Structure formats: structure tokens, C-alpha cells
Length: 128
Image (cartoon, rainbow, N blue to C red; front, side):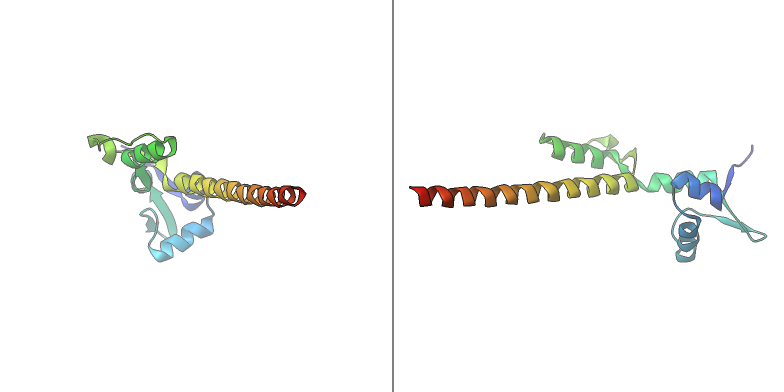
């Protein structure tokens, strides 16, 4: 049985992060387990996949999240809610940030329309 290993460059490419980020994480004890052999840093695929699994949100989170956005009730918890959804925390953060940006844009538009409507009311009141 062959054990697959990734070097720092390969793992950085897999996770779309810089090698410097991996170095910083190692110094802080963050990220996947790694091996240091003769000055080389190697990551075992099994450890990478285990870390990725820990960094994904549960199926229950996705179920409740999707229900909240659709306006439908989430329903009762299921046994499968603890299973991994395969959705990474990074993906959740990216979507959440985009949703927040869109909500701020809508808020600004609504405030603009409210101001326009108030001005229209004042102008109409003066003409009466």
C-alpha cells in the first residue's frame, strides 16, 4: 500500500492558498498534520482529507441554511444532520460575504428610494 504525500507547494495549490500561509499555519499549530523529514515538510493525503472533513459544515447546517433562505421551515433534525455536507467553511464564508454585500446594496437602494419618496411628498404638498 502506497501512502500519498503532498509537499508544501502541492498542498498550497490544492487549497488555493500561498505557501507562506501554510508556513504561518504550521508555526501557529493550524491546519493539517505534517511530517518534517530531513528538513522537508510533507503532508500525508489521509491527514489532508481528515482536516478537510473537519473544515466542512454539517448536512444539518446546510439544511437549516437553505430552509432559512427559502422561507420554508427547516423541519425536525435528522440523523444525517451530523454527516459532512462536503461544503467547506471557506465556501460558506464566501457566500455569506457576497450575501452581506448584496444586502448592503439593497439597503442603500431602499434608503435612496425612501428619500426620493419623501422629497416627492414634500413637492406634492407644496403644490396643493
